[in-house]
Length: 170
Image 1 (cartoon, helix red, strand yellow):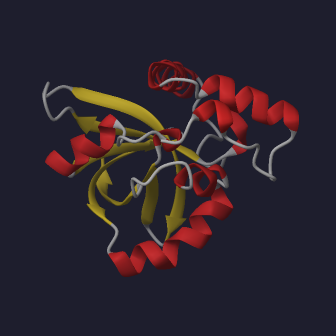
Image 2 (cartoon, one colour; image 1 turned 180 degrees about the vertical axis):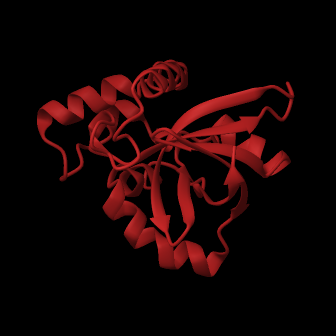
């Protein structure tokens, strides 16, 4: 990752938004801590989160539960997502840090997962987007969450793009 202190403010953010965003992504530990708090908030009040109506920042958000690739325990994280037909597309950006988020490693080890959209819970499977899908999806993904485009410029690591397909009720 490039020096975070020297990252220029993206054009799509105000000075106030940029200051908040830089503070909230100052370390991976802080990102993980905020994600855990977001999971609790989502579970306490799920209505409207999948549409973004009540989610942090107004972005469509789901809960993704994976099996830890080392622990074997269920791990839940919030994820901004985009719908494509019945599939849900998530991006492993980790705010542009040079490593993938833990959930990417978990899905690489075991593609079976669970998702929650507002109150609705589903079993699901995941797969990596193909190179052609990545190219086709990326412009729409950065419309959903412009920070993905900005963060991708901060690292040489290609972000994981996972396609999650619900398989039934959980």
